[in-house]
Length: 267
Image 1 (cartoon, one colour):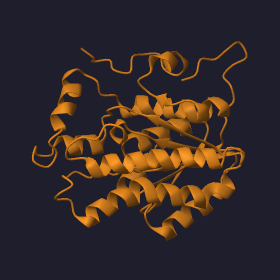
Image 2 (cartoon, one colour; image 1 turned 90 degrees about the vertical axis):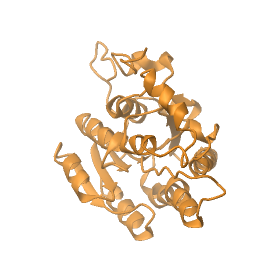
Image 3 (cartoon, one colour; image 1 turned 90 degrees about the horizontal axis):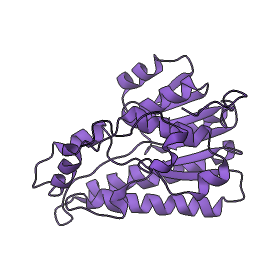
Image 4 (cartoon, rainbow, N blue to C red; image 1 turned 180 degrees about the vertical axis):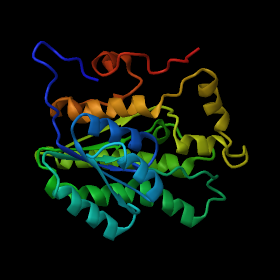
């Protein structure tokens, strides 16, 4: 958490945040962190059970069950966000890891990767834009976009497209009052990561590269990454938020938001 100065902790820069993919992983941890910091948090995901568990942790958290690839659900989210206190933000936490080699990947699997990781982020950003004056949009980035691995091409290509989308919105909305940023979380202990680490070698030949990270203890907790995301949303000035290529692994900023190591089991 940010260090208090002699006058006490600074006021958060946001009042309300929409968190997609908020039933588990980084999204769920971020929802709890933001609520603890005094924000109203609207959380969405496809499964009622996990969302209800997140909502039970704070009266500041409300939920809307649905799929962000559904246009009617995006409209519902935008309407609900506009009813919350301003300034507001959107955190694009919903993501999808599609495994498979390009020469055997189905068209439906390819489209699903783009629908969640790119199309939904674009259309939800546009749907919410009118409610985000003085607010923010935060994307989760990935090393995969710049470093494709065998068996994860659809995900890597979608992540590269998502990064280009983020930079394009940042350029086009530079004078709009909406600050657009992104960060890379590294390898994080989430359902998505645990899922692709269970894949067979034939489906994900590059899995061994991630095994090395685990052996070295280079996997962060969802809670620590959420603390970083909350700091970016609530404490970092807009000019810095938009102009920095944020990476949770950069130790240069650790002293501003955490009191311990990102990888306590590193070896």
